[in-house]
Length: 421
Image 1 (cartoon, rainbow, N blue to C red):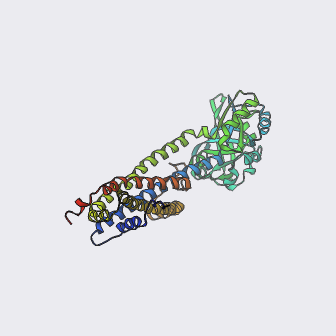
Image 2: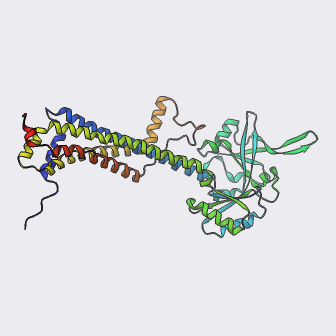
Image 3: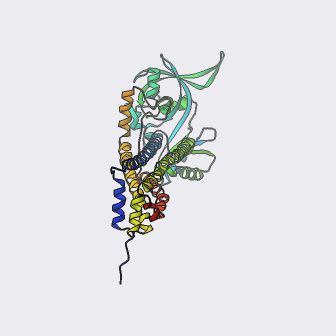
């Protein structure tokens, strides 16, 4: 009983590898092969790095948003809930809810000796807020617990503090959008606050426009009486926040407005996903162009090796063997390109923040201005699923690019190849 022939013979691998090496008469062909490897490696590197940076942006923005804002919130239709304690009891009965925090919210204008600025003032209970959000870990100066009832203390963002020239202990006047009717006309309600804390969230939108005070002080300022604007929830799985908050609202009896972080930032995250898909497709075309350079490389190799192909065919090499030789050559080019692309892509992705910091220091300007973008850092988050996907696509495109040149080599007739030799 005879053994079946191997699918790929050792001499086919040997011939394919020899065609990759530079020789006196084929240095240009070998140079083109090297260019094909570099092209695939460069395109793969760029695609991995870009995807890592976009993943980093999405991850950092989501985490910072979830640190400052609550996972979900329930508020009254007219921004007023009287029996909020019952609502909190209903929320705590749900095992998916970690904690809840009542709040009074309103808009106003902070006036300092240096400047004025519009803010969103959140009246909170410090202990409950610390359990519901991560603002406590963002305090640069002071503590959230320093907000006391009737103390009229205020915690502001770092950007807002710099803009208004405020430090701990400074006084600042709050003007609300609600007015009081006087004989002189409608006058804005004012209250003097003392800066008891400064936080830094790392996102310009929050560091510039957000301020905290005690819920009792906010209630008096906005005349909320014994009620609150709503209740914030922290849940075990932020991705399920929309389902949890709807269930809690139904258990409460309805008649409230519910929202969650995914709805509040829906357009932003949708734009990130759309941008990532578009960039992936565009850069994938670059990978395809680099991979299809193998076609021209192998066509030149086939023309350069016509005589050797004719000799091998005359010695008994089959068309399938010739097909395997050039498919293997293109496969080696694809493997080398994908390997170096993954290597440099992973290396750059892991060190991207440090590289960008050095480039910014040398050039003297920031790529991400804090007053324009959500975050001012340059994050990078490498996902091995993306690395695997990109490398496989690059390799498959490289192998597909070998089919036409390999078929041309396999159909070469020995007599025609050796006629002019």
